[in-house]
Image 1 (cartoon, rainbow, N blue to C red):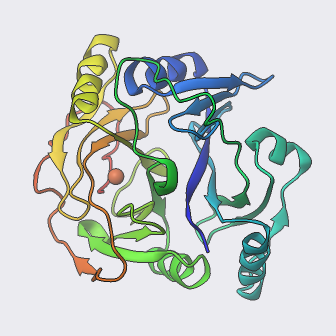
Image 2: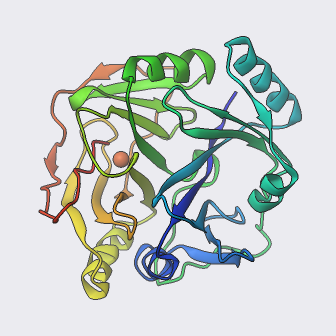
Image 3: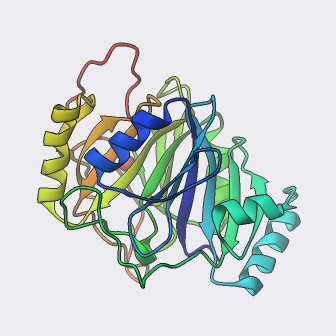
Length: 296
Ligand SMILES: [Fe+2]
């Protein structure tokens, strides 16, 4: 079974600007650089959580789901194949780039490249030092945060994530969004019907959760200081109870910068539906040629 959202990879046209936003504003640390300029971004004891590759799409390239170990990787592979999904072993290069012990790849019903892996590189002996003053990020066993993806067929994706990937339904939001979890983090993945929330990229946003409200407030100040557009003001979602604001990455999708999200206890959790996007706040800030950030 999937234990957490382990890593994500992006392909971006402006690596230099990405580095500035990721470090000076968001607070992530650059833990390594690939020969091609790939940025390895760190937020906890993992060597990296986000890989920013040079590329043309300015979109998400792959999503890495972690399992406990080799037996679980085999089990997930068999489970995917039994559902008729084509699964390919990771190449030597892919395994080296991601610095994991092993991985397999497949596409979800929306065509997103997904990977199941185990054995990420742990650098606990060199504690995470944020690139700007802050307490840090809530990650580790809860994974790196969450991603919200546009999908053409929401129902097909919902069935796939639950029945095949084994994610658990958290709740439903306004705009036909569906939220899924795999550990106490309220959601590691959410999906939105592409026709409900149109936009220039397939990914709507990635969420990173700070450990302190001051880390979040400081990020808002730093957006102003470095000319990083904010997409939405401070606000709070009714389902995950996360206080957050949204900034725009140089690739024109969002980063939700959060604090204080609720945990899910599967022993007592009940699925609910919400028809209001926000408890308060999250006023959209008009951006030329910028799409809404999506919910959650
Ligand atoms: Fe979100």
